[in-house]
Image (cartoon, rainbow, N blue to C red; front, side, top):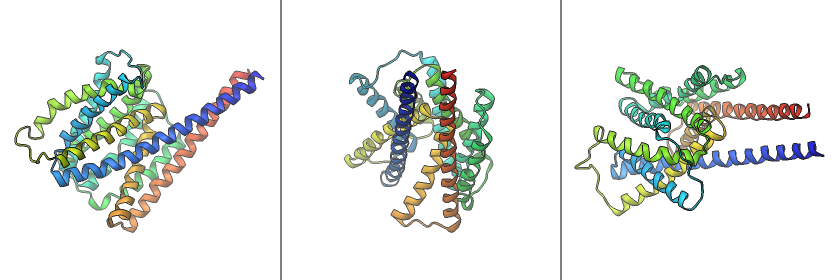
Length: 319
């Protein structure tokens, strides 16, 4: 009877966990796609600086998390700021180098470079964290990256400065995503508890960096109620994006989140085609199908691994 009860609660917990992950992934995809179109409109309509907007996003995230803490949505856990500093530094590097990559490269080159975070994450996890990935899982990343390549190759142009910034962006982004997962385990904190410290720390660091890249005085945009309204709305959506990123990586892995990122890229392309009549070639459509195919197989293999892990746990308990 005890064994049956343990089996039931384990299966039930796994089912609940899968539902939670599915909900988190859905929330991340919807919020991330929404913020892409919101930010694009803010850049085009109001000429709002991109890095300054990122700073606003993290300030709003910091305030929102403080409100959540006051409302007892989560318990604040004491964490040494020095332990969160590498995470904040890598985030700032991620913002700076991805913006420079987009500035010095075409959109196609920028997107292709972003897809290279997948193999870099695999390398970091294997070499530095002793977390080898199975061959079938590695193989599922190939059609995903191939699909991204097909959607980007028509716009690929290389130059020395752009290549350097793109490479640095890939490296720092990969380190950031790995740290988001490892720090939650290392410090025994959840996504909100970790982001509670990282968001204000990153805000201060970005505030020091932004003046080197964007004008502080004589801002190139007009401050209107409409502009501030959209900036505030994008900040609220950014809070959802930031929180769901930490939550997904904490519940799954940096590689899983990276695969979700490729999925969002394809959904954004399809959304542009369906909603705004953006051109979509046959090669791009084939690339989207290739990416989605790889993600479906990856999801299936990860679920099978989870089932096998549960079966091993039951056998061990019986013995």
